[in-house]
Amino acid sequence: MSPELFNVAAAGAKIAFVWGVVLAALLPMLIWAERRVAAFIQDRPGPNRVGPLGLFQSLADAIKFFMKEDVTPTYADRFLFNLAPWITLVPAITTFAIIPFGSSLPVTLGGQTYDVPLIIADVNVGVLYMFALTSIGIYGIVLAGYTSNDKFSLLGGIRSSAQIISYELAMGISAIGVFMTAGSLRLPEVVAYQQQHIWNVVPQILGAVIFIISAFAETNRLPFDLPEAEAELVAGYHTEYSAFKFAMFFMGEYANMVAASALIVTLYFGGWSLPGIAFTGVAGALLSIAVFAAKTGLFIFIFLWVRWTLPRFRYDQLMDLGWKVFLPLSVLNLLYVAILVAAGKA
Amino acid sequence: MGTAEAFLPILLMLTAAMAIAALLLLLNTLLGRKVKTVRKLAPYESGMPLLDATRKRISVKFFIIAMIFIIFDAETAFFYPWAVVLRDGGWPLLLAMMPFLGILVFADIYLWKKGAFDWE
Image 1: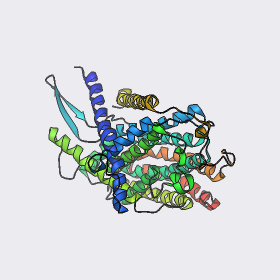
Image 2: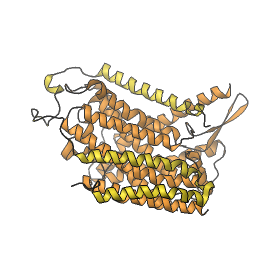
Image 3: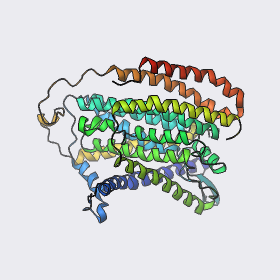
Image 4: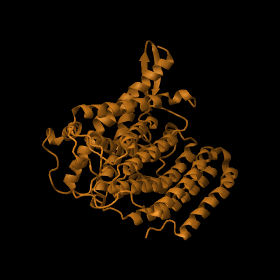
């Protein structure tokens, strides 16, 4: 087998693995877990009828989505209305390409050993690819809100996009510190730097806090879920969507949450590495995947926990926090890390 | 791996993602109900007849935010290549970026004073 063919096959296998874990196992589990955690915090049983502990609830929901009628409202712009869920879902599930989910796996094939790095695409633009895709995802929300021709959708879509772009700025500037210390935009090198030195969260605690809180705003999660403030806006930008198109927005949102957790772990909490442990061989590769999954799972749980604990922000407070607090603080973080790096202290 | 070849898995992933989305929507079209009524296709208005026009004017604040975002986002994009080589450049490179950062901070303060970030 030629190396080129092997690379393509390996990429296909890695995509199948990541999507198998994220889409087929994690997403349904996550929706179930969110409802169970909500029920636990609010002292009620939650979904517990479909399968053991209600575990198959998401499967039942998926079947229901397939059986429902797909309605396109009379006044909607048909083409763009139908395009919007694609623009939300496709970038959301392709962002995982640049996140390293483990060390590297040695594969012996036809007497030849290949060292397969556990990342789908190790491209030189690295995290810029991810920021670009999340920016494209905003178009899905804007288009859904605008083309539905419904006042609730329009307000939800515009609020949502204004919120996301406000926090994207703080998020982007605070992340620059990480690339200064690593000297690269590629996430495997960010992980390697943290493995050799120290987790970025220790020297860059300010940047990490800004990044994590901005990630909540980026994924439209409480306390920043104003686009979906159901008391005022019914359901926000996807009010007019039904059946599987609604499910696509839903999947996109949860996939974004998983991707954001994975990115937080990779940038600030050492990615798949643990201090003092070398991950070599097949066992090391499997262990590194487990470490990465555990760290990401912890952040996903924090996302759920926060949602059911904190009240919602008001829109002016949200914009104030983004532009008047986070933007100056992220520039401060940038300067601080730049001075550390120039002085050779990091 | 800076070549186009490195992006091949991304192309593969994008194609597969679109195929999955198309397959799921096709399944929905085949299995879903298809009973269209005038009421069902009307825009949502909490169960009442439509009260007024749906395309309304939107607060100018959103346009200002969008414009400021484009300016600042383009500026932050310049920081990325600089950040990657800062370790090699050291102090001279850090100082070289300061006027640029100064303009950015000045613009931020100016917009703040003008009330571009106020939501009343």
